[in-house]
Image (cartoon, rainbow, N blue to C red; front, side, top):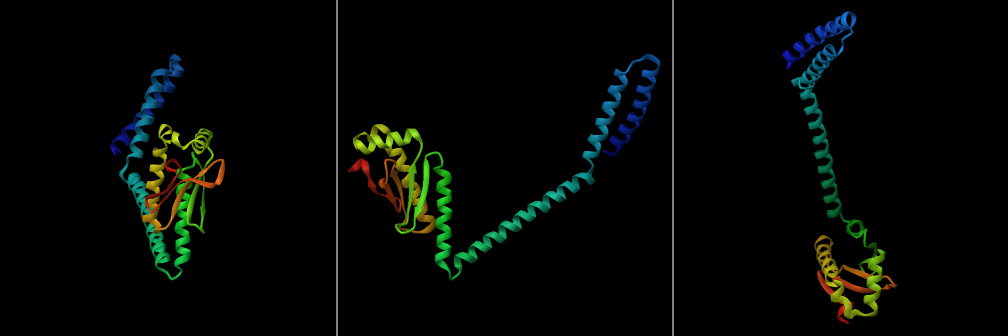
Length: 201
């Protein structure tokens, strides 16, 4: 690479003289400009690919990755310390809120997600227009459930219920609330099993 830089530098100087001479005597600039541009590109390419330049870049990236590893490592240790500490209720509350945030992100397009700590229930209240209309029809006539593809939605909730059970323990429920009456559940799963389904009533 040093050879390329030296050669490119010499060509850049000679190209500059050639460009100046061509312009003064013949009013011609294209050939000289091409030589200068190529020489400049060769010098820049050579400098960028110098071992010392790459070593500095690699060193800084290694330092950044090391910093990330250290940070994440300490965070993991910190979490373990909280879980193992005597204040189990606060730790459990943190887990509950973490699950709430995950569900809010996962069901953002479907609707709003809240957590009722008294009943240990995550409640999903649909706000999407099409879903709201479909669920209102289903509430009026549960026999339409199969045609509407109700089982696809409830299977998703049942799976999430099982994941919640693994993550923070048993006795947590997840419900799809009736958009026409958000105090009424249309489907509830607990510990990975269906406990209430309006389609089966």
